[in-house]
Each structure stands twice: as C-alpha cells, then as structure tokens.
Image (cartoon, rainbow, N blue to C red; front, side):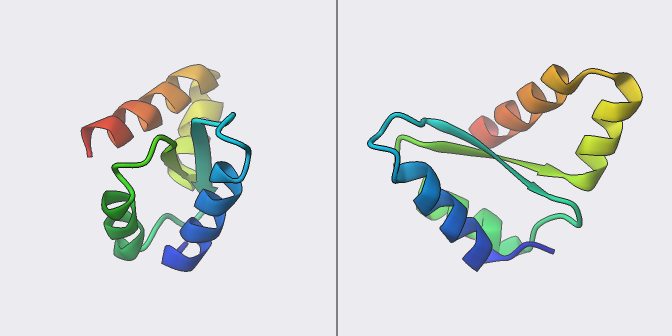
Length: 81
C-alpha cells in the first residue's frame, strides 16, 4: 500500500508547478494506507486536489472502457472527503 510519504512527495510535485496545476490523479496499484486519508484532510485547505485511484479502479476502467468515468468518480470521491 502507498503511504503518507509517497503522497506528500506527489503533493509537493503537484504544487511546485507555479499554481498552474490544480488537479492530480495519484494511482497506487495496491491501494492506500489510512495515513494517506489523514494527510489529505490536513491539506484540505490547499487549492490543489488529489484524487486517488487503486488498481481495482484501473481494472474496472479497463473492463468498461470508460476511463473518464473512473477519473470523474475518483475526483468526486475526493470532493466528498
């Protein structure tokens, strides 16, 4: 599982784009540790939004052939957190 440290590195790369990047999709084949959710809540006041996708999400997108729906679902889930 992807942990907090990997999430923080991704968040730093996203925010180090002179505020030109507002949305990132972070994919972890084996899912995410609970510390990632906690870190997301800590950074919820920031402008950038990071949507999480797991291997199951990617497999589902492949099965249905609808990657846009998978990305939209991940984004909406992030907004609800």
